Length: 553
Image (cartoon, rainbow, N blue to C red; front, side, top):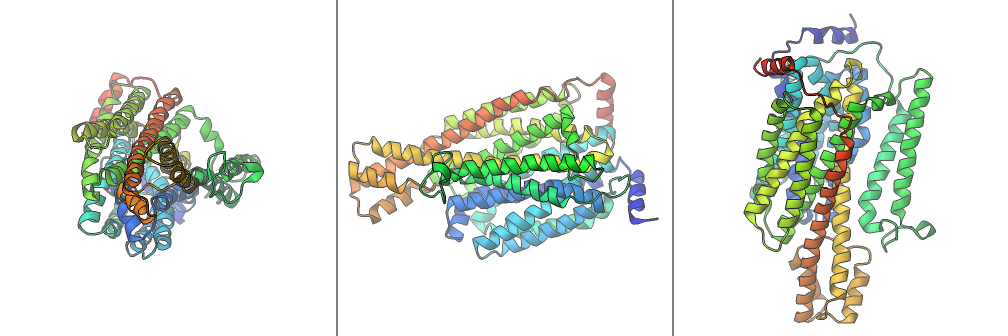
């Protein structure tokens, strides 16, 4: 019997009533998202440790999500080639190596290599394999519960991360998080033999190298263009735009070329299919309406969540002046309500349609973003802020509890590897664009608001206003008001002018943050239009009974 034949036989004997495999897979999901959220509350510490800027750390965070998005389809295909459990193990080992390197990183370059690149590549192997392994180890109602648990754990990891990251950064160092991840990965590897491999039928496919390059380059350029838009300008070029083709910002051309490469990727995939060869992903999957709608939902969910999780720490740390631990505590309500809502979502799915639950989740997220926008003031209103974060957790939890099962249930066993790749590509593309897009909106808004404020401030002379306008022409970084005051004093400005500049900068900070949250509100509302193809039938009574039985199995 060949290794591949053995893999096909083994899954059939996996006991679907045993929840031990789910523990290992849930821990893997937790680790994959932990540092992604933990590092958001450590932005100030990272800036100080590496003597860099918020924009640089924004790029590192974005690159981590982007590497996953770029290679998630490839990771899913590798799972089809060598087996999902073997891919899961290889990915965990690469991830642990990246975590260890990040824990001792002496420079931003090494931080980027360990965290953004190695961990990103490891996660791109682990996550598609993980969702296929869930489908291979659980059936029926148990599978539905398992996906809800994974969604809840993902939400808990994203939300608990700020607490752990804040505590570690304040009491010890942000590096503790990455060292702890190495230990968690070791524990998962010990438990992996309890996870039965997912069934694979037919001959092993071949890896599409050209498709990998086209998809990775296309996604990378699109996100790079969005990320750099605050520095280069969206259409009208800023001073830092390296070149200005035809008088336009480089952003337009970078994003445009990325879109062209993605179009070329689809053409290449169709060409391979027409010739009977193995594409990186069968595009026919995207014609499955529930799967397509589920992917869009996951994209939007992560775009909003990670965008808000990048924006809020800027407010709490650089405007209010909280440390990392205090920031994590302020964000704790998201952790609690997201986990509870995700758990409740699996029960609600027995009474209400997936489409209804997801729509309620998106509407709730929009309300939460609007409530957060109202709390962005010079002084932190703790009750209102925490209530807004709790509402956000409810919305995100309801969405997370449904969409993973929708995507995987839309295909048969042979398509789960590719579906898993598409699922996490959508999630991580949403995460990377969330940080890049909302970050770019905040930074661009900060620059424009600051320039507008000083130009209309009668306390500031026209000469000083003009000098600041020129200096801010290429964009300004999000820093504390104390740093602005120190910089103004170093240039020799008198005390009244310095005070006026600080006031204008603080006002610009609040306006920029509100603009970012307003964008999140609109994105949540707009995304409601893409839920039409989600499953809209309410389960029959016997299905409800089956789900309840599976829950108590």
